[in-house]
Length: 208
Image (cartoon, rainbow, N blue to C red; front, side):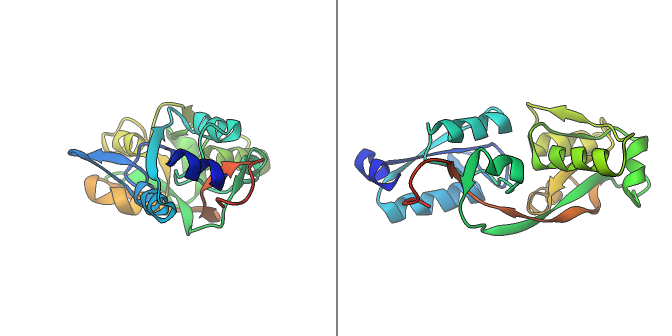
């Protein structure tokens, strides 16, 4: 909790490598989550230490184990995750969007997903949404989950025509769209969701 952070003089966070969270830009670190965490560390009067997770599952496990103070990683609040970590108040609402290549026919509805290759990041809120969709509505739906692929890589694959679709949070797509002129958002999927920082479940609430 708070006392440990002040005593160590360090706020240790875990994040992931993406344009909306944390990335190295020339010689300096950048990204919305990184900047928020930097401000929080300044507010506490401590140094910020950043760990980058290898995968989303890794990220949640590290928080669960209490090896970091918190995850600042564009994490969507989901019931499954809330069983493993505790979330602070949400700071942003996002919507999942289906991403496609503009020179192909714009997908009109979920049925379109049955005729193409859909790839998402493993252990993501997107993968969870697809599982619910499969259970409740579209038993024939299939997709690929990649542990090692970050959002930008998946959008790049759509841009290059290697895959047909991926799913991206609206805030991420806003940031990425300028870099990938050939991809577009076809439609929103599911309900609006909240992003929040995640803390170890059994730590006191002082930092939160």
